[in-house]
Image (spheres, rainbow, N blue to C red):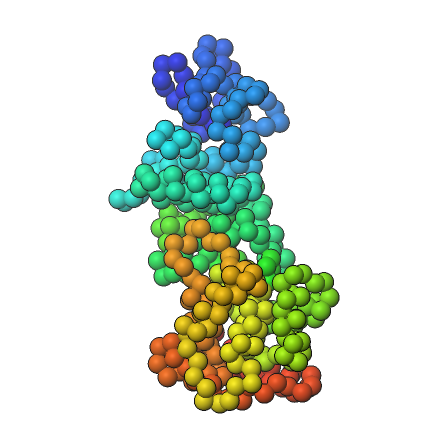
Length: 395
């Protein structure tokens, strides 16, 4: 920890001073106490770690909070300095006794109270939700920031995300989804946005990096999002995914292939509109190629031109497949609305834009072209090229 209470009730913050001579003098004449549990603390002034306060061995104070690393301590200090530079008063390690939670940072901006949780080590979704609800009970908006070291960047537009990362996804006022992160080692604020999920782990996105002290508080609280990752990169990965589909099997892929084979369908020759990138696909953990393939199988395959397609029927199918365990929904606790129906709506709207469907009115479509499968790879590649020439125009 970076703060402690003295016997007089005064709070000592190491964010205010790291002068060793002063702190050694203070240590000789004062006893330090934890603001949370009241236990006595030790002021550690070693050479290898950031100066900090620590509980004595076997302390049970807030066990759900991880033992703080230098990375975490440094991040809190730098975020504290940054908020102060915005002309705001900020409290370090503020404790809320009503909910028995300690925020890394707390501040007020405009008419709103905020707290920052700079999370560097993985925690469970249960703990994440508990802390979030605790702050919300006090009308405080929690701002979760991921430790930048947790971001696994594969190349310029590709990243690997686990269920832990998805806890941090949130929406701006325009309902655009992004993930905020900070790396104290590079002093960079990192934002991942325009995520296009390909599989359970892999996603394409736009990365933006801003030196922390150049970041404005308004841009942090309400970021502007505009740049899309290249669709061509996504398409290459989609093709690799199809190739791997017959290799390493999971229960999910086995169930999917069983359904295809029972209808005498070759997964390689599924239409090019199966497995298209959608901004709301992240609502579904199951790979796009599989859940869109199931929609094709149950609602499009073998159907004649002119057949009516209704949003509510597709959405009901997806919900049933979720109940059966064939499609897995992704948990997104920081996004306040249910975005699953928007993923289905987005899919149908894109199919209409690209001529696969024809839109009659909102949530009502008809099949606009033959659903005949390609007979060979050459036919499929020709269809794929044509479809994505049109698709590029819609993105």
